Image 1 (cartoon, rainbow, N blue to C red):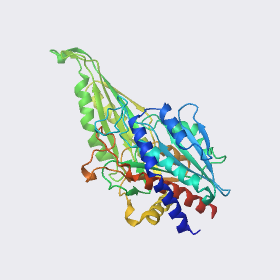
Image 2 (image 1 turned 30 degrees about the horizontal axis):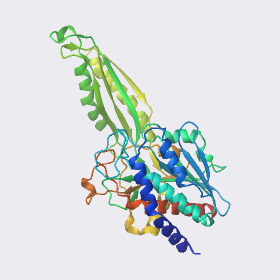
Image 3 (image 1 turned 180 degrees about the vertical axis):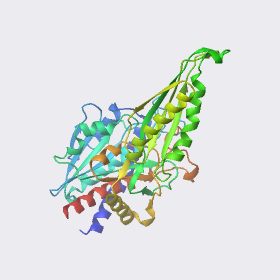
Image 4 (image 1 turned 180 degrees about the horizontal axis):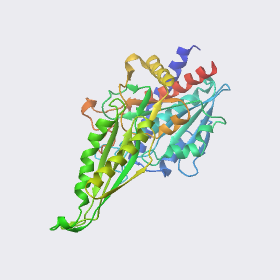
Length: 406
């Protein structure tokens, strides 16, 4: 068989599986689970790959699934990943298969990711003779703020085949902004790193009728909020930006009370690890200086989040070429700039080179006006599942061929 024949075989197999993948995806969508404990989702994945001859293991500290497919020829290993968890919000789509779990919704498309990876596993297992090595399938809980990728790495997912995987691939569907069926990515920074920020401004409490006898921390906190954008604009290169968003402010419990403290919380997003570090020093300086100017104090604290998602340049070019060759030139569009949302697949890409792809899956006629990922109104079109499975499978097959030739 020629390489072209291999492409056709994998594509035909993935498309034959489309009805099963849609049923799996809609079942997962109807019964979403959040966080690190996804027992029903884990069971559905294991049932869907049962009988394929994979080496399947469950996570110890989380309900992950790791499955290893041994190829028809000996060689190195590559990794394909899908996240499985939903978001803690109530669905408002009105779909026939909408969430039946109160307060949980697959608003970010992880149900499609899971079904697509099941499809890739089934496709490659049916044609394992085409593989010059092994494939590790990483089904991960806890992407939405629980750092499930780090936990799976700690439990050995990157070495599940017996040796460290040489490269890794994954994809993320988008309910908006990208035409359905179009894959997108870019070399270098693809998605931002994210950290949490809290600022506690301490002053002197008192009665609201006598502010001159107190030292109100609320105006100071407000001054900090309005000063942050100006500081960022005058401190950081606009082509390597930093985004700081203050999302909460808590202070007095009563309308006639000047509080002792006002607390701000928010997120910091950066597209380079250098700026991710530098912005902390700049925020410390700003907050402390503003507070001092008003005779108050400011204590700034940070909580580490996900690092910047960085695509290896060679792996990006490889993945883009695979999509264009397998599906057509019009099915891949480079992204001109990264997006500020964060992703814990960055943990994997910090360990091994690889590429993360975005895939348009909007159910709207005009994706520019569609509800975004994380919206309770987000709707994803599962007609993209077969091609998502096919691309993941073809990336693994060609990556192993490429590694075998080096």
